[in-house]
Length: 345
Ligand SMILES: *Cc1c(COP(=O)(O)O)cnc(C)c1O
Ligand code: SF4
Image (tube, rainbow, N blue to C red; front, side, top):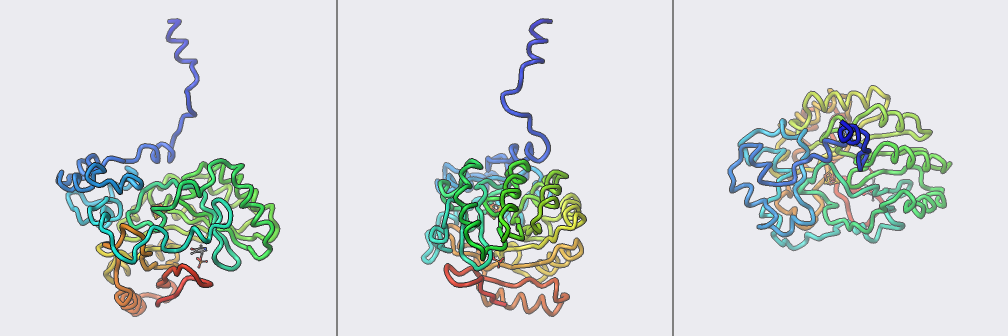
């Protein structure tokens, strides 16, 4: 009896994590397990496994279990699977594809702070994500460039406070919503102390990958801030939006938060007008406004995802002939320099 009582009173080594944090921690990391869960041939797993693919070591497979039910079992070309499963093609060295095609090292003015465009700046709040998207333009982003502890943000806050032209702070990553709400609430409070900052934009894939992430605590710090909160999610294919994701997006919009979507144009995922039209209509039905369709950034390991710009321009023209104007995203490319993203169509 005594030993049982002792065990019951022993404090856990770490705080017990529930809800979205448990889902985040429990993500699939082993290609063989992913393939087993999805009924895929072991050869697909072998091609993705880190032993046969050293480059995946720095950006390994990461898939939350909440995504699995949206992937068609047994289909190696499933448009959601293609976004997350490492392929041998990632190893190809293709001229013109670099580790930092957007010149982000040069745009980094303080640890974790990117300054490129007038009026707004980007805080890379964490390197962590709920999912590793194989086409990610920050897949080679250096670890050391991201502050680890809240105290390490001080130089970024000071830089923002010293520049009265900054009206909007964009939390990016990684995925800023991988951080706990207490930490995000502190960050938002700190930014709200800077009088010339009026808006806080959150770029995130978490509400789509792990819809449980949209908690009351999260809505509270966004809505409770003096800053106007805007959430930009990232959905590339309509199959990513199941009932739970639709409900999560609904909670955000019901809280009065403007929600926009950015997508990346990806070969084999969304490079057909039917898919893009379905995506945009599904989002508009959910009160999520299509914002940007990004041309792929030429980051090393992603060349097999590229769709020619001429195809993208044609797809946008076809969308415009089918959809209301507000449901057609701007097709853009991120240049390494220049005052804004380039609008291609
Ligand atoms: C994309 C981007 C922004 C935001 O651009 P918007 O056109 O306002 O969405 C800001 N800073 C950097 C470095 C960016 O890459
Ligand atoms: S969630 Fe965003 S930052 Fe993270 S891997 Fe995907 S695209 Fe990159």
